[in-house]
Structure formats: structure tokens, C-alpha cells
Amino acid sequence: MESLFPALALLLFFIIRSLIAERRQLVPDAVDLNRQVEAYAAQRNFPLAEQTLNRLIQTAEKQNGPNGIEVAIFLRRFARLKIDQGQQAAAIPILQRVLSIQEANLGANSPDLLQTLDWLAQLHRAKGDIGASIELTRRMLTIRTAAYGDNDWRSAATYNGLGLLLHQKGELDAAAHAFQRSVELREAQAEGNPAELVVSLNNLGIVLQQQSKLAEAEPPLRRALSIQEKNLSSESPDFAPTLVALAEVLWKKGDFEAAGPLYRRALELQEKAFGAEDARLVPALSELGRMLTQKQDYDDAEPLLRRALALQEKSHPPDSVPVAESLESLATLLRGKQAFAEAIPLLRRTLDIKEKKLPPEHAGISITIGTLGWALWQQHELPEAEALMRRALAIGERAGEDANVFVSAQLLNLGSLLHEKGDFASAEPLVWRSLALKEKALGADHVSCSQVLELLAALRVAQGDPKGGVPLLRQALDLKERAFKPNHPQIAMTLVNLANTLQQAGSPEEVESLLRRALIVYESAFGYEHRAVGTTTFQLATFLHKRGRFADAEPLYRRALAMSEKSWGPEHAETAAIMGMLAKLLHATGDVAGARLLMGRAYDIASKTLGDKHPTTVDMKATLNGLMMKQTSPQVN
Image (spheres, rainbow, N blue to C red):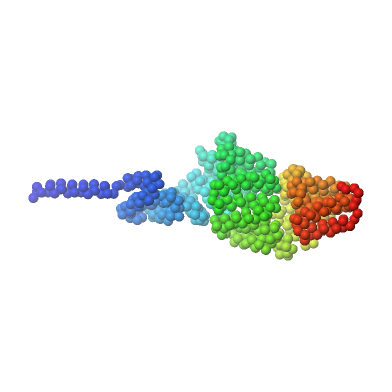
């Protein structure tokens, strides 16, 4: 019996060894399976990769339970596979389970949760759930602070990411604070990455600019540019984002001369580095085009904006938000050119894209609705324009105090439309409310309040109180003179409005000096051939004409006419208006034949462009009939 035990033991040893060998043959260890997963994933054979990874997960669940930390490791790799296949939505619940397992094993404040939280934040952002992404990012910061303290340099990137999310949500104050913290942490890092500091400085400058805090926005952008100049080659395209951001601040401050070269340098660097057909040129093209649009340099702006749109359409789907933004910029230019027939379809297409791609209450949708309403108002399609303006206003009001500036703008537009309709009683309370919101959001001394003050002055004039409009315009002029350089075109616009209002108030003493000063400002800002120069020249000529100073008025009329024919075209209503006034002056000086010739041309243009029933056309017809009754002068001018 004793001799049997060694034999049985030896047999048992061989049986166990064979079972172990068989098990190893059927189920390789986790390291080998992991290698297989990586190999399949590298070959983009995702079905086999997922199948193999599922075997790993099931084995880990059997060995350690469904909440074992090893299960979380394999689940996170499974989520990565889903992301690599573009299945971001499928990855979210997998990572949520990973997070739950990690919390159960490691605690809710363990730094080991940070990568999972970061992935989830990115996935929610890609899905459009900005609120969830912000919540996850803030939790990351809480964990970092608890683990590493308030001044951990690794939190800088997280603060920068949080700032981007808050900016995307429209919470600009909170975004600025996040970017400021990112800057502070990166500055405190002894051997920090200069490029990362530049990113945070640029983001801070951009969000301050968007809050109209131009004096605060400029220093971080100039500092970013200074850092780059010390660390980059002079031909590096990495300068471009900083140059574009700084140029926009200078543009908004009214310094077109300083902004233009920065935009053009950015564009030149990118074209040299990437080629003329690269989508990375779009920001410089778009912003330079928008600045030139505001400057009314439409001929220079239009090719830039059309080129930006073509690049966006080449690099994005036709119904994408970037394409919509370029469409809207081009539509804004066309509005300025009064090419409403082309601008309105572009705005409708923009709105259609945004309504499909953005949440219903997104600020971008309300902005486009308001812009389309404004364009339709200019086309005298008042019912639809008013409905759109009220819709944009309602969206803004639901957004709360963060949208005060936008709500103020919509109230201003709606008040302007009601002003045109003659509904002054309804318009004026809206405009006063617009002023109150703007002063609350930006301060009573902010230059943007001037636009509201000017409409209030126009409403006073429309209701027979031009004297009540004068102090409002003087207040608007004071705001602009404090905010802008002396040759800013916005100052000239208010000078013209004040001159016209003083005329109506029966106080013509300052009118000529105000108009001549406006003319100097426009000529300095835009050059001698600009439309604004021509329009102001026409107004000055009309004032002198009415004062009986025919000899002073006639050369101004002729200069204005030549400029209008060049900028607006010989068949434009503006050209007809100048012809009509010059014809009346010639009549007053005895040149009936010259007057009749010009008035005949003016009437033909007005009837084609404005219609026979327009008040201007009716007046021209009556004047022409009167001239036809008189004998022709032997001297034709």
C-alpha cells in the first residue's frame, strides 16, 4: 500500500500539469491578449480587437468581480477603441462605468480619476453638452487642488480648458477668470513652456476684447507677441493667432491704421507657410475683411470674405457652423453695400444651418435672427423684420443678465424699426430700456451707449422736439471723443447728426463748422474718394444752398456728384438726389436749361430706382414740370 502512494502522487502531478498547460493553451494570459488587442487596433481590425478585449473584461470580472479595478483598466481601453472608430457616444457610458469603479476602489477625490474625467469632459463637449463638460472639468480642478494645492502648475491646462468651455457657453466673466488663473499658474512655473503661456495670454485677451474691455485686453496680447518674438523665427506662422487677436483689439479701439498691417502680416506668414488654399488662413482673411467692411472699404473687403467662404466650404461640410459664420460675414458686407437682394438669401442659409446644428437657445442663432430682421427692415419688409427682431429679443431675454448687451442691441434695432414705422410712442421706451441695460452691463461711460443716445435724439426730433435731441447728441459725441482717436469715422457720423439736429432746432450757427469738421475726419480716416466724404460734402452743399450761398454750394455739389457717380454708380438713387439739388441751385442762379437737363436725368433715375410714388420722385417730377414751363436759357451749363 505504501508503494502505491508515490505512484499516485506522480500521476496527480502529471494530470495537474496537463490541465494547466491546456488552460494556458486555450486562454492566454492578459499580457498576450492585450498585445493582440493593440495589434488588431493598429490594423484597424476593430471587430477582432473588441472581441479580444471583451474576453479580457470577462476574465477580469470572473477573477475580481464586476467592480474590480482591473475591469476598469480594460473598460477604459474599450472606450478608447470606440473613440478611435468615431463612436464617441458609445464611449460615454463605458467611461461612466469606469469612473464608478474607480470611485468605489480609489475614492471620489483620487488623482487617478483625472484621466477618466478628462476623457468624459472632451466627449461631452464633442456631443454639444457643454454644461456636463464644465461640471466634469470643475471636478478635475477640485481634485487637483485637494491633492496638489492651489498653485499646482498642472492645473493651468485645466483652467485653460475650462475657460474655453465657459467662453463657448457665453459666460465671458467666468471664462476670463479661468484664463487669468491659467496665465498666473503658467507664469509661476519656473521652466514653463512659453508657447503654452502664449495660448493662455491670447485666450485672456480675446475674451476681454469680446467683453469690450479693450484697455485690459491689449496688454496680455502684446505680452504674448513679445514672448513669441523672443522664441520664434520671424517667419513662423505661430505668430498669426496673436497678430489677429491684437489687430482686432486695435480695430475695435478705432485704430484701423495699426490693425491693418497686423492682419496682413498674419496672412502673409500663413500663406508662406501653408499655401494660399489652406483653411488656417480663414481667421486672418475673415477678420481683415470684417474690419474693412466696417471701414466701408467694400471693394477691398469683398475678395477677402469670399475667399474665406470658399476655404471654409472646401474644408467643411456645406451645412457646418464654420461655413455659416463665413456666410454671415459676407452677408454683412453686402448689407453695407445695400446689396440686400444677395445678402438676405445668405442670411437665410446661415440661419438654417445654425438652427440645425446649434441648440435652440444658442446665442449664435439669436444673432443671425436679429441680423436677418435688420436686413429685411432695410428692404422695408417690416412685418417679417419686426417678427424676427422680437424673436431674437425673446431668446436674449431668456438667457438672463449675461445677455444684457445682446438684448440691448435688439431693443435698439426694434426701436429703430418702430421709429421708421412712425410708432414713436412704442419705440422710445424700448430705446430707453436699451440704454439702461447697456449702462448696467458696460457702464454709463462706455462708447457703445452713444449709438443708443443718437436714436433717442432722433426720436425727440421725430416727435417735434429737436432741441431735446441736441443734449443727447452732445453726450454721444463726448463719449466717442473720449473713446476714439480724433479721426475716427464714428466721431464724424455724430458731428453730422448734431449739425442736422441743430438746423432743425433753429440753431444754425454751429452747423457749417460741424459739417466741415466731419468732412476733415472722414477724409483723414477714409481718403478723399470715399462714399462718406461724398455724402457729407452733399450735406454741406445743401446747407450752404439753403443759406443762399450759391457760389460756395455749387462746387461742393459738383464734387459730391462726381464722387457719387464713381462710388454708387451713375444710375443710383443717391446720385439722383445730388443731381436734383444741383438742378434746383442752377435754377436759382438762372440756368434754367442746365437745371432742366439735370432734373430730367435725376427724375429718370429716381423713377427707376425708387418708383414713381416715392416722395423724392414725386418732388422731382413737380420741379421738372415747372422747369418745362419756362423758356430755355441760351447758355447751357
